[in-house]
Image (cartoon, rainbow, N blue to C red; front, top):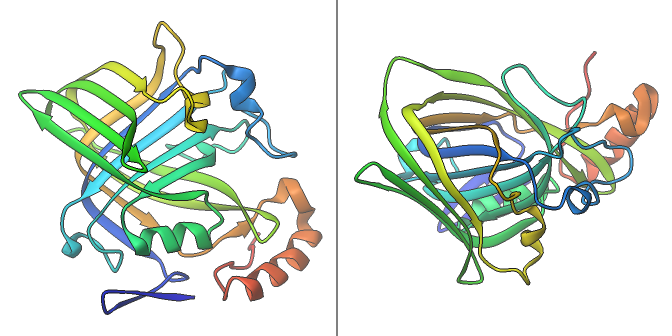
Length: 257
């Protein structure tokens, strides 16, 4: 599957690389664990503490990507039990927000619930403010106190699961980030009680279980999906995979064991 945007053509089945984005990644305990768990489809189990994961990033220039262009995005997801990867989490996508048409197309092709919107990540005087807008209205705002990068590097893989043409599929994203220190989260606000995203709001008092801010964070997406084995089993996965691959224009790749 390919998409065009202002003359550019992107093959959504191809791997993509993002370099040196400004990225915030945090996880918290939710105010309403039952509502968070209810967002998962049958066959998936939430993490025992019902952790919610937020990733906000900004890519300032098209030269920082292999074809996605400059963009901003927000991922919201529910952490899963038994789906973690080395150095990262496994999570069910609940919201993917971006102002970039190519990113919207890529996310929707992966089955992610993608919405047009905007994300900003700004640091002034040691205070970071990251904000996500939907329909022109701010819905999530995070405030942190941040320092400078040092010699530390964080790396690993994050696994995100979604529904693609009826199949439960997963995609693993590699990352390398240079986090700042100190890093202290002051607040995580969900600003619209009537919006569905409000169900993911943090508990009071705020309990952060993981997180970092990196002014230089790089990510790689593999450009393919695999059918999640919890849903189909080994042999069934190959049958469902062949069907999903044809539907998605070869976006889904074979499971290799």
